[in-house]
Length: 222
Image (cartoon, rainbow, N blue to C red; front, side, top):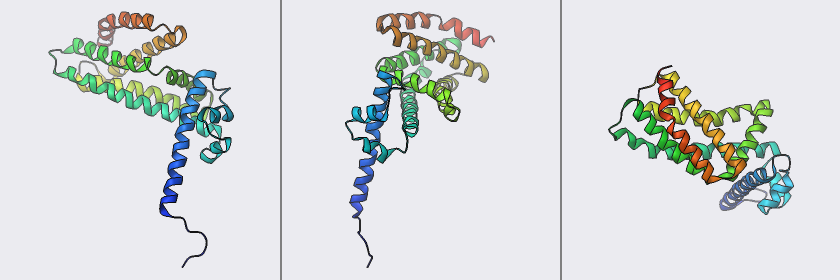
């Protein structure tokens, strides 16, 4: 016979589930507040208010605001990874097409970028928060690896798709092409976030896609 209060197994499970739910609520709220008001105004009070939770709920789940911000960055990274993986699956059937060499590379890139752009347009709030958090990670030496990780995911996923479907590019040229494409899309995305003109952004993307044959050729010949 033990002394003290015994905790029913289901009670402990419920408490853990409640903590996880609050954690996700706070991360969701943090993304929204950061995107709308910037990082400096994303106070714990503003975040808990947006989540509809008492301030004490924050301290129940996180030890500090920095811990929450790191959790938000990790959430962004996971979403990017999941989305790129799903987009990559839509690209793979290109391997069965009657394409080879540079034409196959161009086809893969075009279909991947159209799929990725559709996702970006549907997640404006998340993209704004990502830019804020990337700058925050760059200013904090101990968090710099999180900013690097975001871009490594983007480049690595696209480079992996190209590598799996064609051996037209040398490994270093393959990675450099992926990095160049990601940098261009990053610029298109930032401009769209500024002017909020989806039609103009779509036209810019279309124009960029027409240049892909020359871009791919330049990387093959390097």
